[in-house]
Length: 208
Image (cartoon, rainbow, N blue to C red; front, side):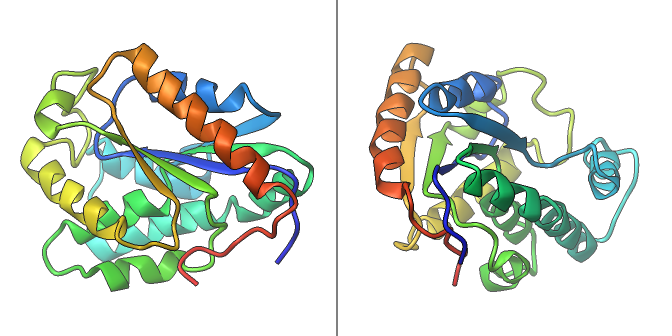
């Protein structure tokens, strides 16, 4: 395990909330930071996923899940390098989203979905922005991409709740239905608390 000098933050949610980048800024103001957003659509793997999400192509479900995982793994060397340089990483979605969304489909277990992402850099803090799928449907351009249906996202919410039972991951749930100012304040407080705890600690490995 390599030592690092700053934090790995993760912000996640069931649905696209529209305000996530603003929330990221709240985490970032406390430290030198870099921002990772998955899916990273700039890579060749990310472009395949983007075409699928935008309903321009069809892929088999197992294949899609492994592509999402590969998209995360291809960024790991850069993530570790930045952490060792004292740069905090703020990540919009990560392995938890991949597991929750795929396991919400028929025939996929949490265990199978988790396996490809075992060993990824473990977040010091996972901030989950909780929002009822029916409320999310009224925000932004909801419904344009795959998976953006209220029925499917209710199942995704249940899978997230199962993942939150893992006490080895530092989950914090924030009610995203409140005002932006209230959500911002909660994120700031959580970020301040974790920064001092993570400094000079080894980079953990997810689900190991």
